[in-house]
Amino acid sequence: MSIPNDPLATSRPETAVVQLEGVGLRYGDAPEVLRDIDLTLPKGSFHFLTGASGAGKSSLLKLLYLAARPTRGTARLFGRTVSALGSQDLPLMRRRIGVVFQEFRLLDHLTAFDNAALPLRIAGGRARDYAADVAELLTWVGLRDRMDAYPPTLSGGEKQRLAIARAVMARPELIIADEPTGSVDQDMAVRLMRLFVELNRLGATVVIATHDNALARQSGRPVLRLDRGRLMREA
Ligand SMILES: Nc1ncnc2c1ncn2[C@@H]1O[C@H](COP(=O)(O)OP(=O)(O)OP(=O)(O)O)[C@@H](O)[C@H]1O
Image (cartoon, rainbow, N blue to C red; front, side, top):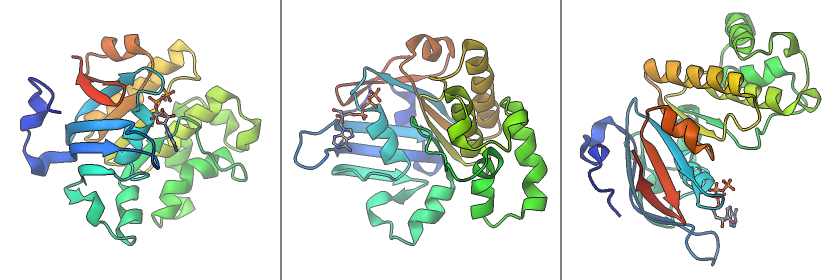
């Protein structure tokens, strides 16, 4: 399905971080949960993704962070066709993407500091080089006094802030966040949004899925809406 009057649809392919053409997704033999998705996300764009529970938001995000492949149509990420990626390509592609999972997915046996530092460690960084950056970002998200805590001892909001810090720590080119402010109060939600806005200003492409239609509309950013697996463009 093409989205009427969508200026993104005309963007040049080489500037697109994400391109989905005629994409469908089904789990097993069940009916498709995503249908006829055409979507181009230019480099440096910032979109919200809304839709009722079960509309397919997390499933669409899974396609974008390579946790699922389309069962129909074509997906391109950073100009590469996803179906042609080999197993050796996936870790490198994934390092370019920062994901805030709805259920956080923190590692319980690592401290908050080590969770946040993980993307830098995986990229081959040395603790003495990145320690100050990790501490600064954790301080920014209000976790200065919780750096040595383990995830099971953190509140829901603290876990969420840690998940966000980890996702953006290595300055990914594409930031994908699934309900990133669902567990924090309004003031913290505004603060966290400022972080995404700042990273976008520095060049990151950002996609944020949320139930919070007001948050999405007030942002002034384009809103993509999923309605039972079909993509609509709201504003
Ligand atoms: N791993 C899976 N196996 C089978 N069906 C799934 C799986 N994940 C999601 N679904 C189904 O796909 C549909 C879309 O789910 P999805 O989680 O993408 O929606 P959502 O819009 O993110 O919902 P929510 O806002 O509640 O998180 C639902 O019908 C769901 O039951």
